[in-house]
Length: 502
Image 1 (cartoon, helix red, strand yellow):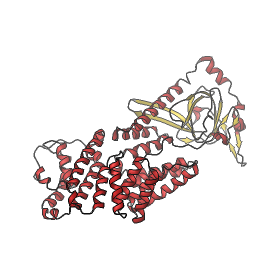
Image 2 (cartoon, helix red, strand yellow):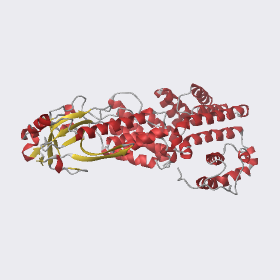
Image 3 (cartoon, helix red, strand yellow):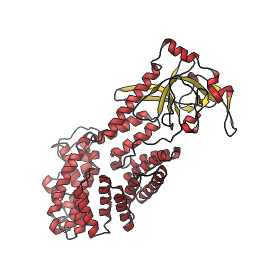
Image 4 (tube, rainbow, N blue to C red):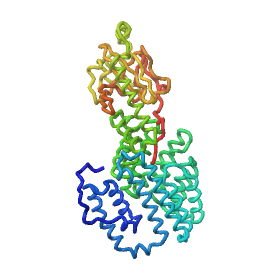
């Protein structure tokens, strides 16, 4: 969106009437010109003037070449109309602003109906019936919901012309919307048999990740998904949607592999950054939602909340972003409260828990060092929470505390509990990759070697908080009640909700 600038009352000297513009109704520039004109009623603001100036040459060129326009075939006119429909959908938020997100589907539906009427008026003039049915199916397929009439039209198109790649791609999307994953894969694969193209490749990348199967089978599908997404990006490095889908694939492999490789998350974030350079991808709610899920895992809670909020604004009909935003805000608020109140424990009960902490609770971390199963010796000096340095791994230090409470919430990842040390300081601990039911309980003593201390700062929609927490990526480093946890307590972190694609 452009910044608000004082409007200029005089009409520009290059003013072109709507009547003139309707002579080329499906010109993208003409469509943009009219949109901007109506945004500011009878006057054009400076920013609108700048945009109109940028496209006026194209408009005048089209107006001065009516003979050329008249020579366009009916098929070409229909194709231009469908292209304009999809341009309107893809750039809707860019032109109208994120605050109009709640109107997008309804406005696109109106545009779809008028475009369908235009196509039907050209029905008798379009001799290539395969193309006609492809365009009809594509028009009906513009909305996010499944339309059986779109599937019917596209099925006719590929039967009449099996080499019509655009029809195969649209049919694949139709099948995907209906939940027919296998037919969707066959459609995109069929398109690739005739022509290697970015749309088929990136769509195949998305669908492969939705395939059911064992953990090993799903992992293989996700790995193949990444390769397809990379191929799509290589065909057009400026296409933000392809970058976004590659980012989603990297995010999926990060969680699906069972071993969280930081490089996968790094590649994921780099791809999202590239995707944002394209306005079509930048206004796609899936990008903001999926990246927010990654930020949440990284405990970048401010960025996660902003991402969920942006996704909710861009698509108000999609409840998931708003739900996730609310759940995360509730979790953070509850964690801060329980940390500040030390699990709501007071007096003798709290002091009794602290007094019972002893050297033996350190287990294998006692005595100033720890010897790993491979024979490596690590120096470990016990210290209170107050001596930990935030934003880094506190090497050669071990902390000991007693659990005062756990923090329950809708998402099982991470498992969060609060514990107090000998000084009575309470801190939150987030444990990842822990098996279900393997979490610690109240009164347990917990020793943590080389803790990573994070500062959690959030200011979002009336929620302001600032506290510290310890992040633990695997439970096997924990010593609970003097005993080190085993591998049976570890389980891979999995996405509770699958990555959402465009």
